[in-house]
Length: 179
Image (cartoon, rainbow, N blue to C red; front, side, top):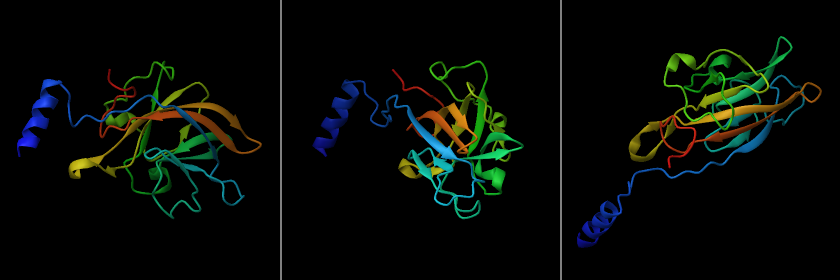
């Protein structure tokens, strides 16, 4: 008991939050292939928490992803799971007038997130991803937020190459780590 009190005093004295999630800017890139491509074993979905590409064999085979890529009406689109009839909290919002570096906070307005329809992929546009719910610490359910910037699209290979970064803090809309 004495050790716990001493540890608490040290933490308070250091003015440190023991429950704060420490994360750093860690942008990465990934290439996804259109869901409608006929080749097997292509990754067309992405799970932003824990940052991994996912092979979606059929839209209804699972919900372990937050966003997929496809081509609709001759244009690449982001497909949240809800656009394929899968129940999910994952959604995509557009950040107008922002760059990847200047995007610091995900929108608070939940109506800005599209979760049930394709969202056109436009080069140079910044998007915010709200992940599906994940179990967090202390029994909470968490959405994680991140930013996405398409870097290149290739209709010949049916792929979209983009950069992204995702916060590791549960239900926190900050797109950059706190100071």
